[in-house]
Amino acid sequence: MSVINVLHIIETLEPGGAEGLLVHILKNLDRNRFSPKVVCLFNQTALKTELDKAGIPVFCIHMKNPYGWWNAIISLYKLIKREKTNIVHTHLFFANIYGRIAARMAGVRTIFTTLHNPDYTYEDNGRLTYKIRKIIDRYSGRICNTDFIAVSNFVKKDFEKQLGFKNIKVLYNCIEPSIFRPMSKDDANCKRLELGFKEDDLVLINIGRLHPQKGQLCLIEAFKLLNKSAENCKLIILGKGHMEPELRRKVEEYNLGDQVIFLKDRADVPSILVACNIFVFPSIYEGFGIALIEAMASGLAIVASNIESLREIIDDARNGILIEKENHMKLAEAISMLIKDEKMRLSLGEMARKKAFEMFGIKEYVKKLEALYMKEAFV
Image (cartoon, rainbow, N blue to C red):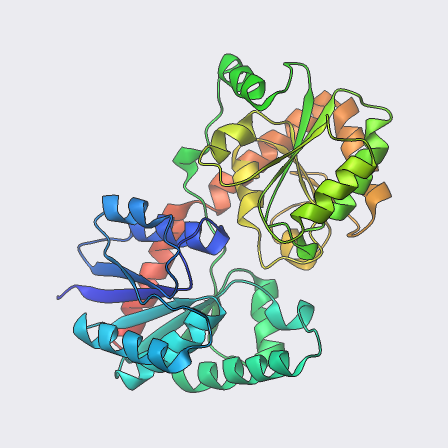
């Protein structure tokens, strides 16, 4: 049987949830059956080095802006034909639109799109551009795609309702378990010192883009309440985004500059996680939350919003605590409870770690993805 050529199309290869997940998946794909390649639309390719080391070809069509649709489609069409592509798999909006149209023009019979976020329920701004975007996504997907993969049941239901997509399979996001291993106490303390913390500090961490969706303003409000009763409590906000200036202003307004640090573009996230005590994830909505399962795999106690997609991951009071979204007082209460009860904190962290390894390991994910590829490639 000949090797199946699979081309993944994504907007960039900058560090992020979808981008990092793609890199890990392709590195684990069976090369005896599949030949994976990646093309990104924009010249932002920080993760290219990892794919190069794994022997996975990476192409870039060097788009100057996301609306140069005709040149993008033609460039992708030529690349798809040249690489004798059997399966095209797209990720994120512009890559989805241009990739699926180019694939259909090139005669590719099997076209997948991974649906990462409930885009059309929570990001409706009422503008004409949004409505046009939704129409283009709906009809290009219905006409071109043979298959869709949703990262959670919540995302699946959202796209069925909003765009009328059919044939959506659910594959939960996954992690590479070997990356997230407990550190010795000495190593963890060294990382704490490197970050400017003391050995006995209680460190909270939030990871995600700095965006209203992620609830970091609510987290800072909650931390202000905590700081009154837990002076050794510290907070790391790890990520980048347009809300950074606003978040920094709020930290300064509350005189929390000595307790809150902002980090971004870190290659040592696994070691930072295991040097912390509690992972806080106060998102207003999520497609799934890769950062959450990374924190679970690191053995951290979890406090997260009680929203549908996160209920697919966290069993309340068993491997984490779920609280009402956008309620900083409830958030502060839950964190305070874990600060005071070390036994509960450690127990929740251990159960979270167990679930992360049992349900969200990359090997099981790749087996399911390969089975989908094999099934659809030979229909």
